[in-house]
Image (cartoon, rainbow over all chains, first blue to last red; front, top):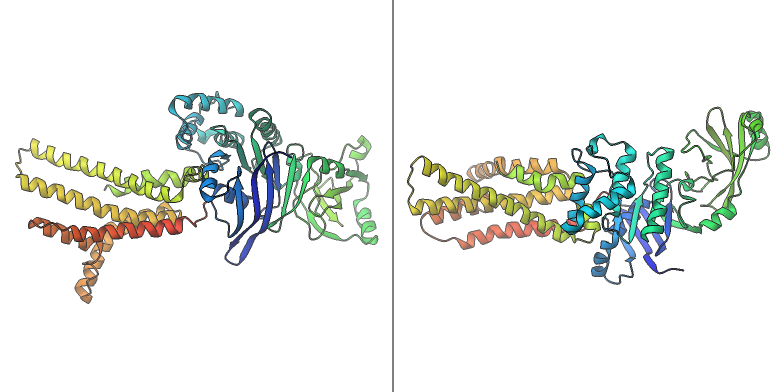
Amino acid sequence: MGEEIIRLENVKKQYGRHEVLKGVDMQVNRGDIYGLIGKNGAGKTTIFKMILGLSENNAGSISIAGSRSRKELLKNRNKIGFLVGARFYNNLSARANLKYYAMIKGIPGKMMKQEIDRVLEIVGLKDVKKPFKSYSLGMMQRLGIANAILGNPEILLLDEPTNGLDPQGIADVRNMIRRFRDELNMTVIVSSHILGELENTADRFGIINNGRVVREITQDDLKDKQRAISIGVDDLEKARELLAAGGVRILREVEERSTLEDYYFRLIEGAEEGIYGKTDHSGSEEDSEKKGELSVGYDPVSDHPVLGLQDRQRGADQDHT
Amino acid sequence: MISIPVLLSVYGDELRSGTMQCAIGRGLSRTGIVVGKLIECALLSACSFACLFLFSWFKNFIMDIILTPRQYEMLAVYFLLSWIRLLTCFAIVSMLTLLSWSMVLGILTDLFLIQILEILLKAIQQIAHVAVYDYSFYGLIAGAYASMEVGKTEGQLLASVLIYICGTTMITVLFFNRKELPL
């Protein structure tokens, strides 16, 4: 196990009477890519805010790079780079925007140009001269990431960096995250509400549900358990009837999909909604003509197998336990 | 005339662009930010008043208007007290802007403080015979100016104004340290 770089112990956060974090324990080691997985509103962003000092925890302790006092914590926050949404000056180019942030980060004037060139090259925006307002969503996100790695921080916090990106954009971000760790020796904490987005990127996953990190798993654990299978079915209604006759209860219907490679399951009752197992859907051509698909997968939140029934024609899932 | 451009330059971009979160995320203390912003307001407005003072001197020079040294002294005192008055407004506006995270509210408060509140306090004092104006920073500064006009120095009154500035800043620091900022 590597040197511990971030530790949260029994961290609690309450807004009025609403308890968002009910005692989060989390540990990230130097050189980790740590995936923080949970549905929207689970508390991922709140955890990030507390690590960054943008929000105060009501109880518990946070330690960054071994900090033992508040003074050390403040000082060590200097080691963190983070994605600040996509809020830049519309009329300025990527370079001019980064120059502004470089000044805030205290990068010396002599090194500024070199550092900005370096980060723009990493995110592939070095030759882009146009103003920020004409950027695509993917370019905005790249500039946000460039800003996060400006100054070569030791720790990088990326809050849902793939939000709104197309599949190619998502793949690019994943590659960048791996590069940050492998080439720049950064420790990366990245959040997502979809496990599939990070399953091949992160080494460890913290599954956050209902204000707690309910499970920590490694990529190897995940691969061991994710032996999902899919079976094409001709008659979806019949399959539904049979499942019902077998005591399998339909929980609800979901009509959304994120990426082409991820099949969505509504997980078993009481489990995290919005975390999905990836199925092995390399079916035959004959299978691809079937109307629906019955899949068995793994829910990392509950640590239970889950069953999904997907209507290929509608792109919707009916889900069962 | 001076306050809104100063406020916009000090706070406007910061709230929108997330640079303040960036600074806090880099380990800068929130108290440092509050005090730093007030100093920035003070310096920018002092530069503006200095420019106005030089402009009025230059205008007199061009128009061949000759002021006595005493008149120049009082002109300087007027600008100095106006600057202190504006600084007090900035301290109050900073508090509301940072705590509400809204520049619009900050500007509206600034307009209220500069254009309306003084008249309102005077009216209340006239009608209700309660010395709300005299003990407000407007009244204290006006009192200091009136005293200085007749050759007295009014350190005590100005010290009272400083209490307004320091008190407001302390409240801002207290609450801003607990404020949750957007990521």
